[in-house]
Amino acid sequence: MEEFVQSSGDDGIVVFSLGSMIDKICKIYLSMSKELLFPGRPTSYCEMMGKADIWLIRTYWDFEFPRPFLPNFKYVGGLHCTPAKPLPKDMEEFVQSSGDDGIVVFSLGSMIDKMPKEMSNMIASGLAQIPQKVLWRYGGEKPDTLGANTRIYKWIPQNDLLGLSPQTRAFITHGGTNGIYEAIYHGVPMVGIPLFGDQADNLVHMKAKDAAVVMDNIKTTQPQDLVDGLNAVINDPSYKENAMRLSRIHHDRPVKPLDESVFWIEFVMRNKGAKHLRVEAHNLTWYQYHCLDVFAFLITVLTLVLYVIFKMCKFFIMRCCFSSKSKTKKE
Image (tube, rainbow, N blue to C red):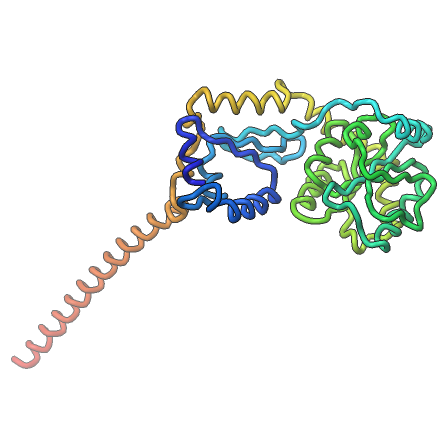
């Protein structure tokens, strides 16, 4: 890995931040491949990140809170989002059958394909109590409590369904970055059920921006909790208004995020790594970064000064005492 990083030369390297899950994947990958693919001194993921010349962060100010950032950090959230495409015929017919009530899109991500039967029955029971049609991405056994308004699919064109404005009334999501940005892109309010990783933090962002209702825990969620959350985001117009506000912020940018990503990658290549954007802090050791070497020097100097003062005071005190004793003996 070290040889690979060094081989970048002046062209530099680009780190595309995809969240905490990538950290775990990279650690596993590096441990498996460091001897087979990259012989030599192993390079950690953190070390590789520190050598990056440009960061493409998969977020934007429609999601993030204001904060300072370095010039080689570029926010390109939503680069995978596109306008909605036509739906498959059977799915389109189901959506159109919703009438004025609209539809609810439900997906817990590609990593959650199945769940315990008790949990799926709980969710299906809650979904059966709302008037909207529900399109649920789920690959497990059909729940016993599945309502007539709910249809299960092993795969759904999530982005295209979220783009069916104003038919799509709410999006039930686990809080993955892809799904959240698709909802922001199309201005759809959310009901969040966080599972693991950065999902809870993502949903806290949406809740703070009044565009989502968040369930505490899928294991403790009851059917009525799900119904209450859906009714809140569907019937309270403020959630839709805030979701549309975030959507306007997302679209109100001079360059599309994908084009911006391409530009900055090419910029780094054209400018031999764009070292003028990279802070020198990345080249410091951990103790230099936290100024521990400076503190150690100052403490050492202070200790020496105090030691010298102590010795001088001790010397003068002993000299005074010795002089007093000599005078007493002479008298």
